[in-house]
Image 1 (cartoon, rainbow over the protein chains, first blue to last red):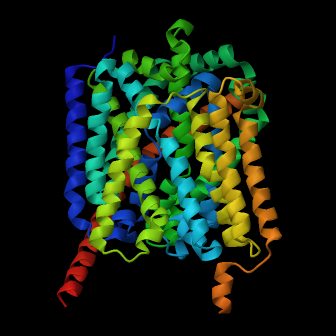
Image 2 (tube, rainbow over the protein chains, first blue to last red):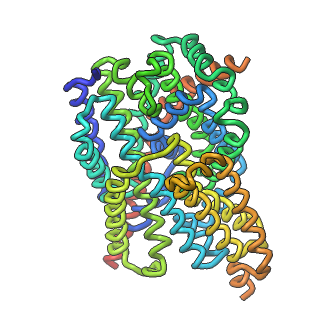
Image 3 (tube, rainbow over the protein chains, first blue to last red):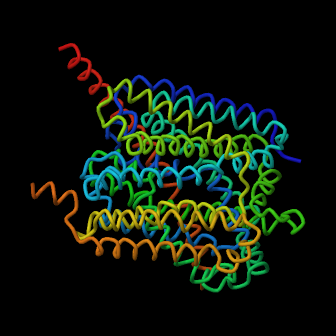
Length: 494
Length: 52
């Protein structure tokens, strides 16, 4: 039985309505495509931190990081520590993001065109959208699962609830683009932070640190504190996640879009430095919720679906009224993530995949109309895919594998584009193909009964490492096989 | 030792988050005002250009 009452429902309803109204009201500030996609590059540090934080934390994040807490104990926060380290490194040095922001582009593939030519830009757009949409495709289902368990929502109404929520998010994203996303992200950052902090402090006070440490020791032994000795993690897990972390902070379009929306590269770096500790919080705080579930719930209550352990805990642990705040906080987190992701992948579709069609020559009005249509289509895709695809294994690994469809190749291309003179379109093309084929084939093999044991034997982490290393090798070998001047050098020679 | 590491890290996360929340609430609001002001200016420039 859930503690969610009608009063909590009222709190959630008022909050959602407020966000949607605010988001729609700011549409008057959007008249041009660059205002729609990158808010006219007027983003400053603190709004950037709020937006990046809100965008990178949704219900799905809370679910998979809490699942990591249940499955791996404290060691489950390892990806968060690696992400924070990578982000701090990039923020301090400006590695990759300095040349990207200085180039004045709106997407990563746009930069690639200068070095590798238009075909590579188009291919990059395709893999970015493919990886991004597969990644985002599971958000709705997981958000719905959370609501069913925490609020005691009748699963019969799940589809209609999620459809209405997505329609509301789509409405303000379509109207106001990045300007609406940034302002609603600010509200959502406040709401989700309050929820995240209140529940964590309650867990510390009511359940206690010692109880949680004992639960981790009982279920995971030393591996619950050290990822290198956990039987389901080990060095391969850490190395794969280190690759993913660096690739994410360099090329994950939703993160990079904040750098590209920043006033200048120094502001972009400050946003990265300021947000980096959040990535530890992002994994550790919900991870603590998962560990609390491990300490409080019986194995029967947790059941096979470890991803639902945290919502099961919240449904009885959080008292009424506060429950409304927590659910509103989680929905806030989800709305900001969905809005940002729809806008981001939409921007790549318009800017890079449709580039050969409009050639940057369409009027602002026509460009805005197309961007809005693309976001609406992405919304429809999310509804369809989100309701039928079922994840195998843990959610974080699914997200890391699908993300790798483009993360591996795009990060290699970005580094090569900025720092290796000999890199050319042969190497880039080979890297993109290999980077897409390897992770995608893993997902397909996982679903075919004949090849399923093979994927289980190798595991997603080793497969992921092979992908990153293979893509880097493909870039080098491909470029050396065709040692001719890049497009940029050709132009400068001319 | 490793348990102390996780305890310190957890408390640091809560402390950092509370501090940043306070900062961002105040300064992020100012950033929004600034951004909207600049965007309004840009819009009126676009309108003026179109009139010319």
